[in-house]
Image 1 (cartoon, rainbow, N blue to C red):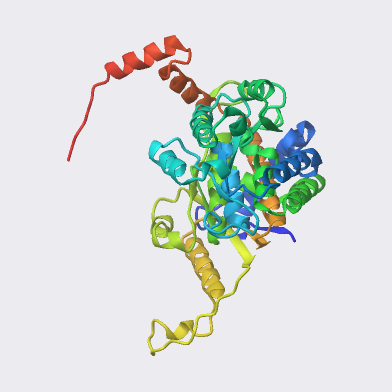
Image 2: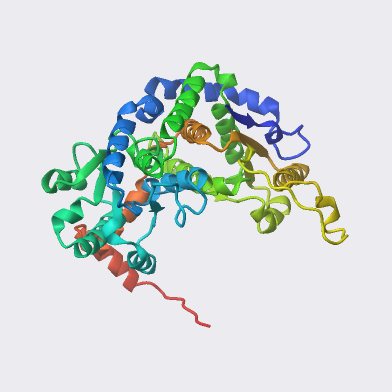
Length: 461
């Protein structure tokens, strides 16, 4: 029931551009100091695996929502950290194609994660609005996308059910417990609400009510997910620094980043794990891409996370990875035991394309493809690590979430940046608010003047 981390192929003998184990060992004291500082500060999300209150409130609310058996659809209205973790959870653990055929007694779940008008219009057209429940997720309530989604869907539901009071019953708002626009709305208008802890940022919030409510609605084993996260949290806090796999994984990635390998490829070899890579991309990019170090100096540090899905992207990306620029570090997500096993039947005609497949399973083929890609990359001198989940269940997914969050915090410390803020995102939000007329008049004037003064270079075909 463990999450296994194999770092063997991150290292070389000195004959290629990979790290040597000597260089890694020399850097370990630096990493150990970062780890100690992190454990002394212990951010709130580190203990979420044992915080029963969030599961309790989500379980209670899910029972209320599903009690009368009339809810056919459930929609998560949120963006970024309020959506990506939920999408990853469903892809990994809910019935495949749950939007068509969910688990018995459970609603179809949709996560638009967008304000694309065509996307939203199609969802509005196809949802049974009078039999749909909406979970609005925003800690502050000031997220433009979530606020606009809420207004659009609330208006549509109100029209479908005939009254504002009836419409309110079809919404649950997940937000800050004490402050913010949505908390004020809940207090004044009587919307049901769930809690986002003030000390937990969006990309670290999957193990709070942000993710647990969706998990309970879908009928997933939410308790086991928390137990998996708690196990990783406990084991990594209690082990020696040199035995901490999250520390070793993050240290190697930072050392490679300092050598110019700034592209970090997350490569799940399970289609059900593909959206875990999307969740990781936000976590890694938003946490580690920073202009300023903690001392205020300008550093412009950060890796670029890339998603690849095996075996699909062997046929679209691996040519670049094996023979292109040596600027990447690879992490394979390996699933040891798939839930299903499909044997390839005997070929109906003798052919060199078929003969070697007889007696094999699709499981054998996926692993042969994964190992073949690993060997090809290693032969080309490219650094590769492997995260292996024994099986794809809630316990192991919880382990994965906590492992990557801890590794990200370590990496932030090693890079001497703050992994828990996102000033670049906030700058974009301010610009958008200014253009929408929500204050920031001076910034709006600057943007419009800059747009008017651009030396345009436009072509058509």
